[in-house]
Amino acid sequence: MKRSGIVFVCIGSDRSTGDSLGPLVGTMLKERGWPNVIGTLDNPCDAHAVLQAAQSLHEDAIVIAIDACLGKPSSIGRFILNEGPLEPGKAIGRRLPAIGQYSIAGVVNANGPKAYWMLQTTSLYQVMRMANEVACAIDSAWGKHSDKFLDVNQAIQIPSV
Image (cartoon, rainbow, N blue to C red; front, top):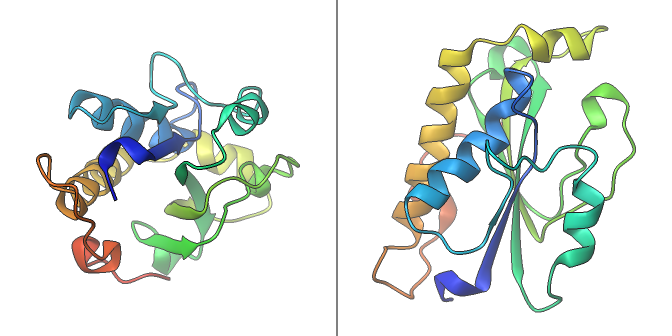
């Protein structure tokens, strides 16, 4: 698969530390030369933009959705890799369209009764570290000058939760 056939939809907001995982990854991918990235720090794909992004995708594109999520305290810092879409905004009760043939969800903080507050008080260091891990893993899976796809699970080497 060619790099040009992959679209990354990096969901989140630059206004919430925990929710900034997607835009941070999107910015890092753009800086690394990835051509098809929706959702960066300067142009986030937040709850208001995700529906428009989903409708704008070419039906032949391979879409990889990336978003932050909340989970068990023991899972913080880990990733959930899935063949299938993710449901953005689910942690805070939003009903947004599922997006992606593949998805990467980063567990940035613990789930609890005040999900919005948990996202607001998430460690920026943790989110930055996780964003860098995702961007590096994507670069490892698809070499910059390669059109070959490596197994993403092999490239990431991070246990899923």
